[in-house]
Length: 196
Image (cartoon, rainbow, N blue to C red):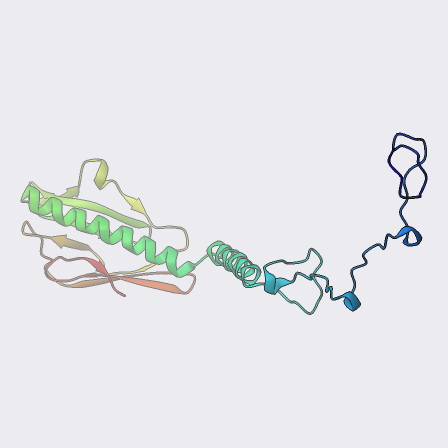
């Protein structure tokens, strides 16, 4: 029969648990600095970051970059939301110049003189037919009104394109609104453009 650690001859299936102590020849091993054991401490240098961060560690580069991206997106949204009167007048000048170029192209294609009549309210396209200027027909040549508050500084009368697309006399049309201005230039060769 086996002898237990307490010195009795009871079997292990008995009712009392087996206890080993220093008086029976068993010494528990304690790991401490005096026995040559140093506890393992994991830190950021060992690719382990603790869940709790103290104030002395600061922010990581990724966190700073995320904040900068968020700030950039917010500032872009604010800038896009601010109305820009220069852009609106400039856009209207671009539309007017594009329409003038279309009239020039029609004059060349049809081989007949066409003109743009400008006034304070807007502009309309006219064509030379039967010896006089008449309103041009067609959907693309309908009259266009200037946007509300737009001031126009243009020579009175028509700006005409001959059948080869040139302008008889160079002209500059100036549009203004809310202190912003844009100039549409009609050079002699008919290459209409918005002045920068």
